[in-house]
Length: 109
Length: 116
Image 1 (tube, rainbow over the protein chains, first blue to last red):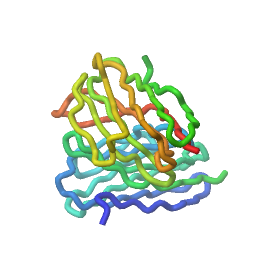
Image 2: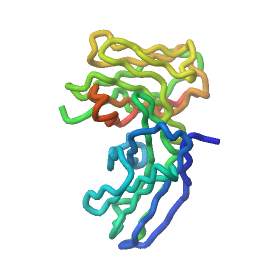
Image 3: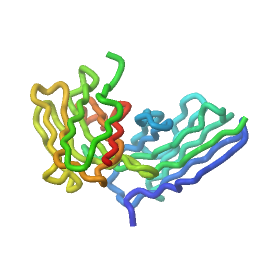
Image 4: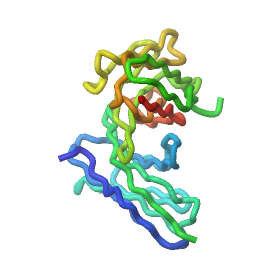
């Protein structure tokens, strides 16, 4: 079993839809949880960062962490074609960061 | 300084050749990381530096790989005797040393290596 599991998709939605992206993890010691967006042939770009269970909102993006279930989510409201990218979940303990495989999202106009 | 930069962005080499990549982190960041990413996978940790000290190396980092950060600023990653399996995107990231606030790593654009 991988430490971080993420459905690779691909996921295709119409413009304006609400997108839900998820990851599960096995190491309960992870303390910090992040979502990165990666456009094709580019480096990952930090979107959201949380360190506790609960929700964190930033514009159209909401990150949710449930440590008891070892489950994290990213919600994108009013999705736009420019949101089309691969979304990577990541989690860390001190200096050790683990990434999911990434979910490829396409938002169709 | 607007972010992490990497050079070159693309490198094509023949099997058996040596290659070297450079990373310039965000100026106030004292931690620097190297990752490898293959198609359809997330980045895999290779090694990291705290200033000029290399503090951790992954088992993925074979003896053909060496990384340096001589003055605690930019870093180089060298691959000797390249193999086709080394073909990947090599990503550099940097962060501020702040255990109290956790690790927020900022990535560069990556160097895409193709070994023929």
